[in-house]
Figure 1 (spheres, one colour):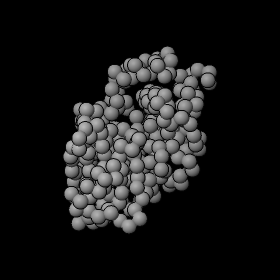
Figure 2 (spheres, one colour):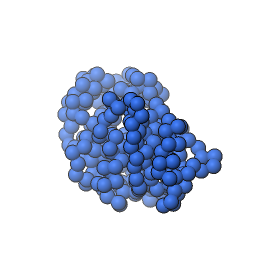
Figure 3 (cartoon, helix red, strand yellow):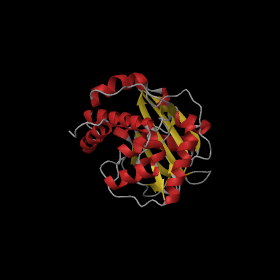
Figure 4 (tube, one colour):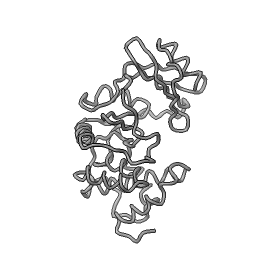
Length: 269
């Protein structure tokens, strides 16, 4: 990945910054660094995938977000991309405007309580509403998956059919949110999801910090405090519990089960 990142820099005419910190993504599938570029400070993100395993929805998500998500949603602008194939691997390099604020956390779940003022939450509510207005045939999550996964990870549920679909960012957690000015990062997985999905995702990833989870329920009550919002929570709980079965997000497993029991009006496990 480092060699591929160097190749992308040479092809795109950007230069690494001295002592720039590497940012690695899930299982080493992405590598990003700040760079200097002709158009001003930039961020170079490199993604890789085995050629036989490319999921086009996620592979093309950032490009389609740049084309379709309204400019009112605060996010880094995608300037250009470069693709190539090396043996059995596909690579995509993406050059973004470099934002001047950093992620709130280095992982999806925060380890400290972020101090976020009222205007930040207001900006988030506006951004999420603007995202839901985008028409798309992309899907962040499929009904077929929910039919299989929800009974598997939640047990008997009132139902698995999504009551309403709206467009979502699809991966709204604390490593993809910046402060003190809101910026929303990483748009690969945006698309249709159960209404309230983004708010539910943020809440589910916050269950290790009850103070944050309570703040989310208060600030996003208009979404989470509805039957649809509660269904969306069960969806995101299912997804993250599924990830724990693969060895990811293990500290969240018990809080997620407790939250699911609360939503389903069951005794705590």
